[in-house]
Image 1 (cartoon, rainbow, N blue to C red):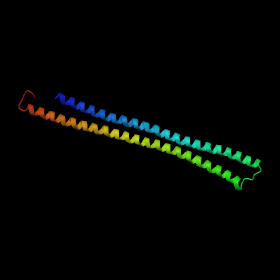
Image 2 (tube, one colour; image 1 turned 180 degrees about the horizontal axis):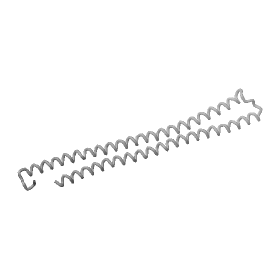
Image 3 (spheres, rainbow, N blue to C red; image 1 turned 90 degrees about the horizontal axis):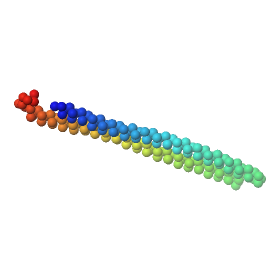
Image 4 (cartoon, helix red, strand yellow; image 1 turned 90 degrees about the vertical axis):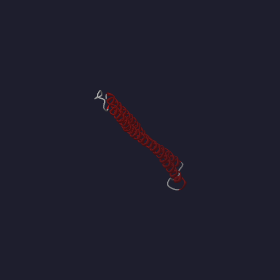
Length: 161
């Protein structure tokens, strides 16, 4: 009957191994997802810095435009001089918004990848646990069959008792 105990230990070891593999894959997936989230935040911050730089550069351009217009004797506030300033403001806003939008899209893509990794990790954990349960059930059925066969062979045989 020692072989039944050995088969039971083997089944438990196999089940534990399957479960541990699933847990390890899930841990790695969650670690990578955390890194992806960190990168997504970095992309957003980078986008904000780039947009701020665009506004800063635009302020310098606008100052130069106003100085050149004033030097030329043009009154700012009316007509084409104001149109130049307004166009500069409009283009600045467009560039800054495009930069922010691009950074947000890249961050969203990173987050989507992180979410997919986490789902993959969860799936791996579930698969490992299902394999573990399947291994235990299969081993249990096999052990029951072996035990039943053993009991059937020992009926009436006093040497086995």
